[in-house]
Length: 141
Image 1: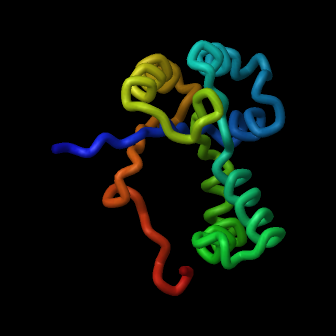
Image 2: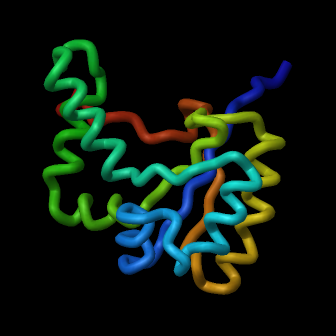
């Protein structure tokens, strides 16, 4: 019997478009992207911002309850990693971080032309299978 995994669509934007998306996702410069996201009831979440929120919540509620705290904090404090993650976004559909493969496939297909047009630098689909996702290094657990 095969496992059914959930999926997430991730995109990378140029420095300029990432800055716009973080500041004003409804900006006209991103309207083709915004139109597709709206059709799929999706919104972009910046990876750096999500990491910073995680660290803030951990520090507020107790880092012992946040198993990825050390790794995430080290990531947002590293200037090179910060610059990288400022350009990465995940698509949350109907408020969910991960969703069924069919939903991810449809969103991915609709976003693909924006890669070809250069609005999206990179488009990828990730599953929730732990074997396919990086684990925190031992020294940051």
